[in-house]
Length: 268
Image 1 (cartoon, rainbow, N blue to C red):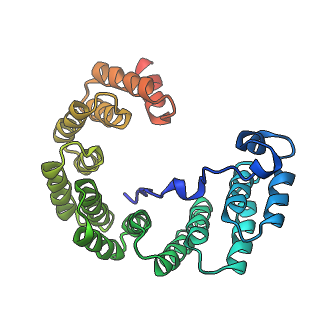
Image 2 (cartoon, rainbow, N blue to C red):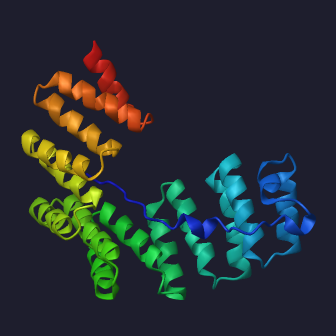
Image 3 (tube, rainbow, N blue to C red):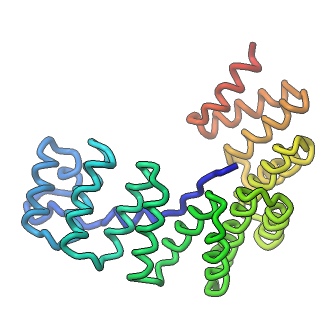
């Protein structure tokens, strides 16, 4: 399966204050004006130890020039101060964009060594481990379960374990974990999806369809549930119903190429 589930805290790199305020410009003019890059570099030069302009510069470079360019101000920041968790979190995001998961994991571990109480970073690290079938996911999940008070965080930790089991080929354990999540939190849609995928991959299409029907009952606008239900219906030979569900998927998320392909295939 090897799916990656990113719970990364995007707010870490979306600092709300404007690095252009001192120059009399709004944050929107800094991010969209033709002189954006020059102004951002100027701000970093003026305030080299400030995270805010460095973060905005990195974001601008990622949007316009790619992850490699966006890394440079972050690496320079780490050279100036190697004790700031934000810089390692931002670097980890960029390494993921470069598909270097091992480097991202190292950066997240470094961030946590500096500030262990970052729950979101624990989640991101754990899901990266889980996507690789790395037993580190179980360590992180058990740590979160021991610390968590919020029901959602407990569900996320259990889900982390389920993803690990699925990617490690431990289908029975994965199914048990997804069932446990649903039992304790029936609104946790991802557990239905992963349970149904396991059933679908085992060619248990009728069982999988029942699982996806339940997820649709929880949220009748969840595009992925309709997509998988459509795949089950098509596998069961119920093509008219499958076409309807593919169309519903496209209606809720026009960017799902597999649903568009399903519509094209079944309309022939």
